Length: 257
Picture 1 (cartoon, helix red, strand yellow):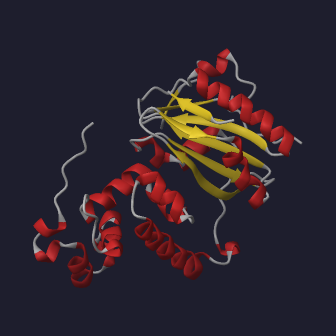
Picture 2: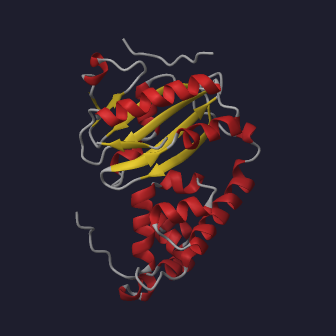
């Protein structure tokens, strides 16, 4: 039987290849370069990485612009990039210059103001089960670095905010309860669902994952915000760390549909 979510009135560590060669813009035929391609064929013909390359214009001394665009999307995720409103967070998480991170934040903010406001015009997403969560964060399954996201819900389980809380290395990400619950308080959320990926492909939660979850549940009770679930996703499977954690949960690894 599917479990549905129900709300109720220190630093932590989540534990748990060579990159493909990408041709540089200067090596492409003139008509295939992102800017020229956009001008000649229209923006709909460009990939997301090519669109970012047009925004950036040039890369850095150590990284070509198209390679940087591909890496940013690969490590942070397309939707997460579009939703990130703090240029400093984005710059620090993926190692791009602050000015370039600011360019992205500004571009996506223009899009939000023109096409997504007011909020009433958007179709709200509701999350009541772990299966719905996994479907919503499907892009996280392919991220090469461990990432922790918070999905913040209102009293009707509708998403009112989504935030990348931390981006780690291939082995873990550092979090603190204040990073998890500060957005919940800022947006008036009733509950939060945490999701993080295991690039290793092992969906079974580590002892550290369980310890983090238990501590965050306790912190949420003090603040009056329910930690509804902590979901671990991989390329092919997922598992849930509900609270209180039990041995049955540890065996509950499911193939991702």
